[in-house]
Image 1 (cartoon, protein in one colour):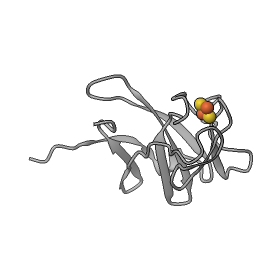
Image 2: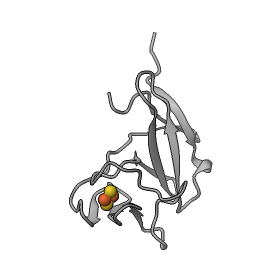
Image 3: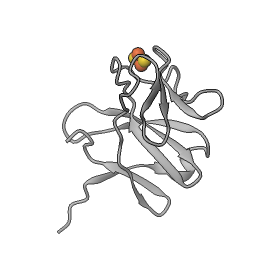
Length: 119
Ligand code: FES
């Protein structure tokens, strides 16, 4: 028997096209994890909601992860900016570091995340 190693994150339609949303992932063991997902059409890029500089959440209010033009992910604490496609920090105190990617599995419209992304 195959054990499902994933959990439901959301559907594609739950993330506005060109926008971002934050989610909380429950883990089988350990505290829940905050994550974010950015949608570009059919593509979704997801990361742990944790800045590589100080480990703080990136959003300054719920679901507010992007710059005004919606081009980059921005850290609310010190303003580091991250490329949406790979999470690399382009400017700021952690330039060259990277957000921790959250691999997603697509099942139809449903997006699924690992049961424990930090395993
Ligand atoms: S905590 Fe994100 S740039 Fe400092």
